[in-house]
Image (tube, rainbow, N blue to C red; front, side, top):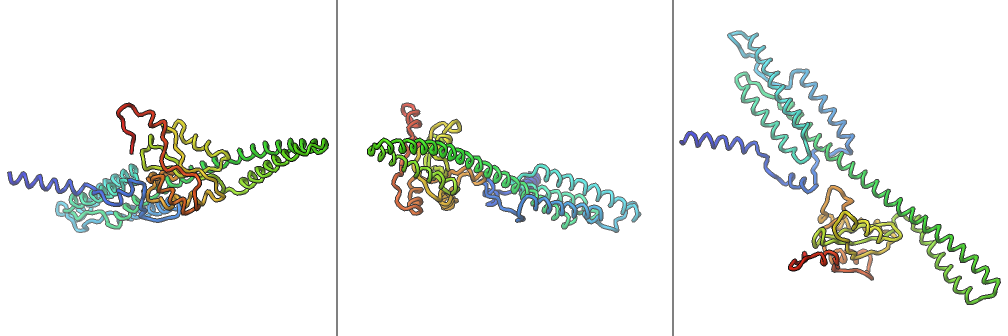
Length: 362
């Protein structure tokens, strides 16, 4: 009984050695904060470095330095046979190790890098144990090179994904900008037509001597001129637009806001788009105000709430764990007095959708 218990305890210790303990780095990766082992500029730089590492792996394999072994092993009292036996067994051991390494690379994801390294270290220990009689083991330098390959591969996968996300964000920003510019041009054309109409009407009233009607039309023409100037300024200033703070407690619960900006002439169109088929309820608007530097205000708000960002991978998902009142305080510090800000969400559709006895989310 004691012998069985000791054996089971030894097996349990071995199994525990195979388990990758959850650490801070793994937890950070799960929420989208990846810690690079090798900091390089871009995905192409990682590819180049990986190719260099693979070349080093091939060179060590060709030079027969990937495996270390005894050179005085005798087989049937023959040194020559012993060396052949050790050479063949070393090749077999290296083949098994490389198969494990290649499999680790093939199935690697950024989040399972520690477990992949653990598997490779287990393979090294197993080979050393099986080849103990002939002192066969994987060269530590070769093993470290293959670990570096795993690390670079994980870094490359993350960097490539981040670059894809950045490209998607850039394309989405360009689409939004194109929509805004098309809207500006349509409005500009409409105002020019109205301007021409009123100028013609004013000329006719001057000829007829209708001074009262002339004053009214000149006032309207002045408004049109001001609107045209505003449109032209918006077209020239790409940083201008509307900053919005919205929430949707029926979809995301309380204490979650979305902070963004739009260059649309009618900013509520953007809010209505966000609350279309993608979420079950419409968004509540807490703030919607124009700024000549909407880009800067949005960026400053995002920076101050960075530690509360919900999606840290796709940064166009501009949702933060904050209450509307907290954002109001930050906005007031950036813009001064806020003339129109709603602290509490109306959430009309959500509240009407609650059945008898159901309590709204708080």
